[in-house]
Image (cartoon, rainbow over all chains, first blue to last red):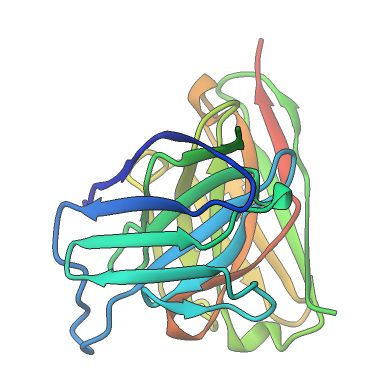
Length: 112
Length: 118
């Protein structure tokens, strides 16, 4: 199974400042079709997960453009350009290239 | 609007069974594969199972293989998860999620809670 490792596991950020979360996979996530299926999810307190980014860098419908994804192969990054209060929650990377799909441990984002 | 609503959670004794349902609306259910994902109390997300749009293929996490069965009724727009031989470690909030294009999990339900306790 692919192991997804996120760093940091928690982050405290001042409002309006940037935030960055890294995700590393134990195997290359390039699918046989040539695409890399790495997504980022946000889970606000008491809420279900919500898709932010898919295929490394494609922003899902309705997601603010302060969220961006990047990376290739085994190393990926989620960046928030200017953190807002509503961004508090836990962020997960997940690979959907192969089964079983696997999630990172989650990164808890809080406001300093 | 596009919506997934889980139901069927509750308190169950170890070793017993439970069936979860996920009612879909607002999109062509029979055109999409579907996932179950769970989250133990205070823990992260764990993928549980997937079923193809037509039910032709299914995959399971090793932790549930042989005990859980994913199925669907496309005439009723309902996804199911039959959970047998439940264990304490199966206690979690169970979410259903739509398998969208580009293999993304693009729609999530609110979840249903399963408590395994004697």
